[in-house]
Amino acid sequence: MKESAVYYEGSAALSVHHPSAADALPADALTRLQYVYQMTLNGCRLGFYEPIRQSLTTTLFHDPKVQSLGVNIFSGATSGILGAAAGSPFFLVKTRLQSYSPFLPVGTQHHYRNALDGMKQIYNTEGVRGLYRGVGPAMVRTGFGSSVQLPTYFFAKRRLVRHLGMQEGPALHLLSSAASGVVVCCVMHPPDTVMNRMYNQTGNLYNGAFDCLFRTVRTEGVLAVYKGFFAHLARILPHTILTLSLAEQTNKWMRRVEDRLLSKPLKEKL
Image (cartoon, rainbow, N blue to C red; front, top):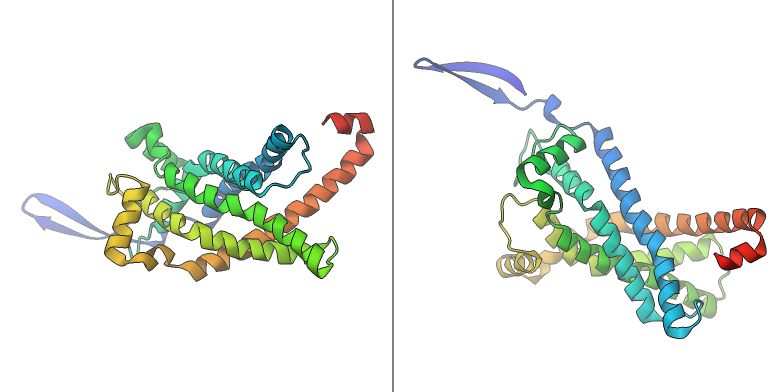
């Protein structure tokens, strides 16, 4: 911070500091942290979904190709919970870094030089438990979102093919993922509000996720949990469309690579 003046009171010198641009975190540092968080979260969500779904459908129906809504929801929720647990420390630091403002501070402020410094400070003052502050709401939030994201996507995809005769391709992926994004935002926004308030608290303002939810609704009304809904939708809709559309293309490319490199007996074993 930049020192702008020094005042003397008796024998003590009191320095008065004013915020400067140097106190703000560079945008590229936040961008790198966001990449790490998204790769961890979505890598787990998308990577674990199909193995979990196939294992459950094979166990329950003896056929991995069976589409069960209950199994799909459970698989999506489980993969989302795993991703949230893995990415929670990164999201914690990201939330605090984004909330910090040296010019117009609002709410609780945490001043970290960068993501690594943030994790060090949290670990030194609160231990490992501090790094996972808010992981419960994060797991609920992501579990809710993931439980409907992929099942809704595949459900919409099947209905568009059946009723509108759409063919496999970018248009089908776009419409299916858009429908999924809207549903995800509706389901995920209330726990998302609770999670952000839990992450940004100092000390133990809330006793847990349900306490935070109860206090929010009691003091601000039921609609308080949907504050910022359209801003969230503006973020989650293109995110869902890009994630699921690119995942489809990646799967298509991987199948082509497997067809060229792997023998048929080996592919059947895998």
